[in-house]
Image (cartoon, rainbow, N blue to C red):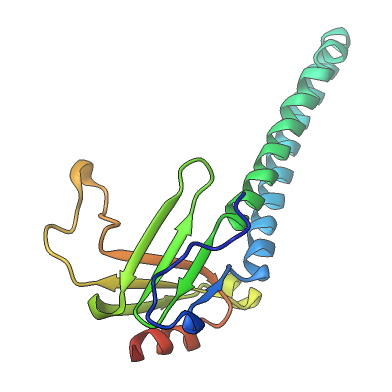
Length: 176
């Protein structure tokens, strides 16, 4: 995992500000991870228990397999959550912003402030409890609203997730 934020050209290097999503965003991701793990693992444990009651020998034989099926995906998912958080960077300069995220494939979006049309702030009730919001920066662009295959085009917007001071950041971007 790269420990340094991406670089961004600026006329004044002292105005470049790099930051990561809020620590509360990581806590938010972990909350839903644990809720999902508990529900899935309880369902798997109930299946295993049903098999063990119906056929005790088979229940004992599949115990290592069931433990592996219950524990290994949880470990992989937990590591993936941390990698998602650790590989997300936001960089603002006096002229543009850069959003970088990705584990296997690094996605970087650079948006110049001249092209920004709208900055939307979104925050659900659970996100409000955790004290962060998401910013979507929409830019001027041509072409259709959908890319090939029917998926929305990501070329004309950037999403900054897990921002602690989202309202202040929105105002700062809109002023530039």
